[in-house]
Amino acid sequence: MAQTDTTTPRTDIRIDKDGVWFYRGQEMFRREIVNLFYEHLKQDERGEYIIDMGEDSCYVEVEDAPFVVRAVLTGPAERETSPVCLLLSLSDDTLEPLDPETIRIGDDNVMYCRVKGGTFRTRFSRAAYYQLAERIVYDAASERYELHVDQKRYTLQTPREKEN
Image (cartoon, rainbow, N blue to C red; front, side, top):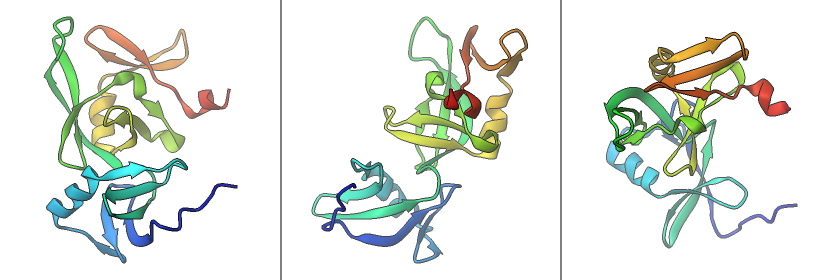
């Protein structure tokens, strides 16, 4: 049985599946505070989320994923071998290049990827999902979905494949 951390308090802060932060059931609308909390968000060894600000820290309840992709944008690539990259507009008001290798399709066809150097699982909003879906093609021969970016194809893992 995992040991419980008794020094870090549990609070009434939670992040819903849409990336909206709440404190005691009320939406936290001050972006500078929410973004400060995002900057200090970490996971403990059990995978639970903590806002860690040095001597002050607390657990945060996360309904699904702490970050949400709000939009998928096309931007200039960082590498010369690829003229375009896909940029993610995240719920912490940052932009980050998409790593197509980290995309997964979850239950109910909800799409996820990893951000912040692969540290955090991130949920695509419905709008971002549809923006990315414009680049997704079903390959009948392999019976798989592929993301097409700059003549490269990335096979998308589905929930059924995770079970195998």
